[in-house]
Amino acid sequence: MRLPMKDGNIDNETLCRMADAFIDSGLNYFDTAHGYHNGASETAFRECVSARHDREEFLITDKLTDPYFKEQKDIRPFFEQQLEWCGVDYFDFYLMHAQDNGNYRKFQRCKAYETAMEMKDEGLIRHFGISFHDKAEVLDMILTDHPEVEAVQIQLNYVDYHDTSIDSKAVYEVCEKHGKPVIVMEPVKGGTLVNLPKEADSILRGLDGGSNASYALRFAGSFPNIAMVLSGMSDIEQMNDNLSSMRDFVPLSETEMEALDRVYGIFESMDLIPCTKCRYCIEENQCPKDILIPDIFSALNSYQTFHNWNSQYYYNTSLTTNGHGKASDCIGCKKCEKVCPQHLEIVNLLKNAAKTFES
View 1: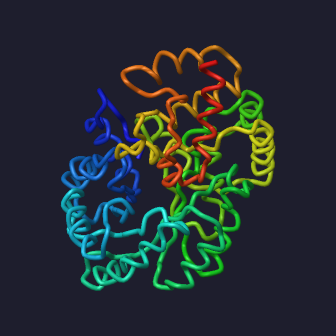
View 2: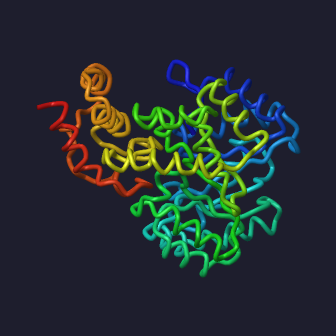
C-alpha cells in the first residue's frame, strides 16, 4: 500500500531499489492484499521482490478480502491466484482481512477460517492470522471463537491509542489477553503524524532527536507484545528514514512519551477527520460518483489546520477535475461507509466539505 507511483502506475524501478535496501538492511517482512493499488500491489511484489530475491530472504503476507469471494468454493481459487500474482508457492502469513462485526459473519458462513486452516495443513500457509478494524469486544469474540489465530494485525498509533472511536488501547489489551502477537498497521496514520500542525511539530523538534515519523514508529514498537510494525513507503527517502529508526530499535523514553501525549492533545483539540487514506472507499469503483474522498478529507483537514487558500485551490483545481465528483455530488449510497476501516460518517463529512469548499 502507498507504493511509489509514476504516471499513474507503480514505479517498479524505484520499488526495486527500495526492496533491495530493505532486504540488505537485514529486514524481510512484506505485506500486501489484492485490493491495494487496485490489484497491482501483488504483481509489483512478484516483479520487484520474489522474482529477484531468493525465497528465504523474505516473508510475505497476503489476505482474504471480503469482496473477492461469495461462497466457500470461491476461496481456494482466489488464494491460488494470489500465490501466482505474488510469484510464490506459499504465504508466510495469510490473514482474514479487515475483520469487523459485519463481515465476520460472512467469513463464518463461508467457513473462511476453516478453509485457510486446511491450506495451512497443506503447507500453503505457514502462519494464520487476522487483520482487525472494530471494537475490543468484537476481537475478543473472534479470538474466543478461533483460538487457532496466530497473530492479529491492528491499527495502533499515539493518536488512535487514546481515541475511543478506534479503541486501539483496548484492542491491544485483548491481543495480550489471548496471548496473540500484534502486527501494527497505520503507525504513522497514513502520513498524518508526519506533517504535523506547527505547534505539534515544534514539540517534537524540541526533543532534538529523530523525524516525526520515527517517533510514531517507535511508539508503536515500544509495547511488549508487538511482533511487527508496518509502514507504507512511497520513496527511498521514507525508506531510509524508517530504516534509521528501526534498524537499532530503542523504545521511547518517558520524556518522548510525554511529548507525544502533548501532540495528541493538540490533535484532539482540532477535531480533524481521522482518515488514514487507505482508499478502500474509492478503489474497485466503490464510489458511483468518483469522488476522491480521502483527498477531499485531506484538503479539509489542511484547511482546518492552516486556514489558508491552498486547500481551496487544491480542491477546485485537482480534486474535482478530470471527471471526478465534487463533495456535493454524493448521493448518500453509503457504499464507502460500509468498507471504511475507521467507521467514518463519510456522507455527513462530505456535506461539511461541500459547505467549506463550494459555498
